[in-house]
Image 1 (cartoon, helix red, strand yellow):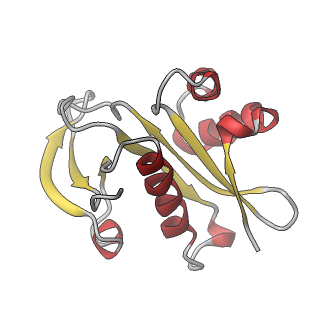
Image 2: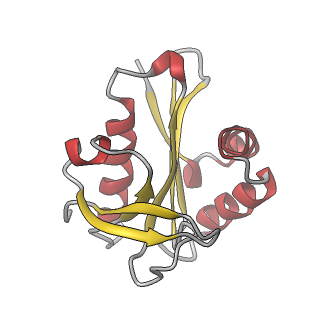
Image 3: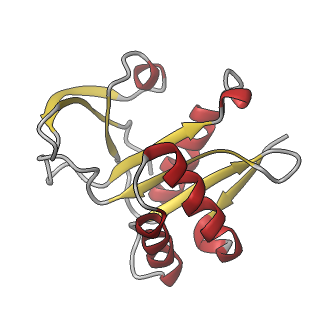
Amino acid sequence: MYTAVLIREHAERMEEAAEWFAGKWGIPAAEYLASMRASAAGGGAVPQWYLLLDGDGCIAGGCGVIENDFHERRDLAPNLCALFVEPAHRRRGLARRLVDLALDDMAGLGLGRLYLITDHEGLYERMGWSFIGTVRCDGGELSRMYASPQRG
C-alpha cells in the first residue's frame, strides 16, 4: 500500500524530499527545497511536488510540476519533471499513479494540460501522452517532448 503526499500539504517532508530528488537527478537539494517552499506558499498552481510513500513511510517515488524543465519551448508549460520510482518499487504502476496524481491535482488548480521532456520511448504513450517532437534542452542536447491528455 502506498500513500500519496502533496508536498504543499506536508512541509515536514520537504527537506527529505529535496534530498531524495537531488540524489536522483543531480540538481542541488537547495533548488528543490526552494521550489517546494514556493508550492507551500500558495502563490499559484506551479510549482508542485508529489511523493508516494511505501508502508514504512519511505519515499518510493516522486515527481514535480515546474514552469519549464530546462528546454527551449517556454510556450509549452507547465512541465511534469523529475519522475522517478525506486527500483524496488517498479512494475507496480507507481509511475502512472504519480503522473495521474499530478494531472488530477493540476486540473483541480485550473491547468488541464502538462508537458514533459524525456529520453524514454513508450512509457508516456502508454499513459495517453502525445509525442510533439524533439526540442533542444538548455544544455544543447535534444529530447523528446510530450503533451498530456487534457484533464478537467
